[in-house]
Length: 254
Image (cartoon, rainbow, N blue to C red; front, side):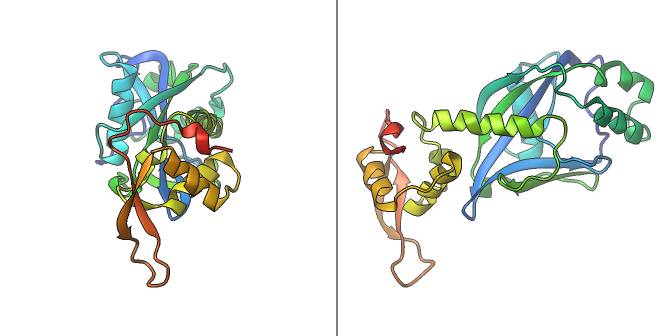
């Protein structure tokens, strides 16, 4: 990413008034669910990858553009999950601080005040990615990094609430969508898949019972390969069944 203003490429004339985009990007790495956040050098808070919808694009196009600038990836799995419209959702003192600290980096303060201090509703997008595919895009004044979903830094505005809502959405989706398919590499262990469900559900699942039900669901197929991390009892590898068109994930949920 090149050096830029906090508000680049947005101006009062280029954005759709009062409408913003916030993206919850999740991955699975070292037995933890991670969320992608970014931090501007003039801010005291980390925040979700987000921005505004330009007048000449749809919300889906805006979300894809924002995520490409943060992850370096296109064609990502995107799911609209909630419209955040609480009139008090924006902490205006944080926005005022942004303007004051950004005055010498971008547009004149007078121009920014006309649109950045208004009320914004935000459309939340959920994005599931494979950790190794993402190369977080950063420059000195705008850092992007992964955080454990259970250990978050101080967050901007209502972004903690947005993350919580995305996790509620995933818990509903677990019964009908093979979530692990978007988070795991092509070959994975049963314990890795089980850990994903345990984190999202917030509970421990019986190892044998989970494996039995997963295999019965036809979601995954067992491979004639093992993970070579240990010479003793190496873990069997699995992959998602590419031929299964419909999968009932509810059968292995508690």
